[in-house]
Image (cartoon, rainbow, N blue to C red):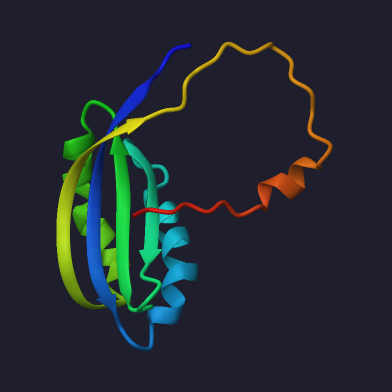
Length: 133
């Protein structure tokens, strides 16, 4: 068994959404971020997190990987802020974080694996939950 890990730079922007735009954040921002940054070198994904006690409190985290991850992150702060602008009432905090992300252990597996009984299309549309404390 072998353990691998990734070093990632995370740009975290915490803000208060405009009252009349808060309900749109969850549906619109993930697609807008992925659409704008999806092909940018070093972009490794994003999270849009909304506080469960107040729908206007939003945290957006973009993830950057690669040798020049810090540079790529800094080069794209302006674009991320521009994507948030239509929803932003007040910016609370902008910070860049260095993250060490452990990956699951890699176990050598047989070349062919049995197929799931569930159709592939069904598994594509399943939502996955992530709890971040």
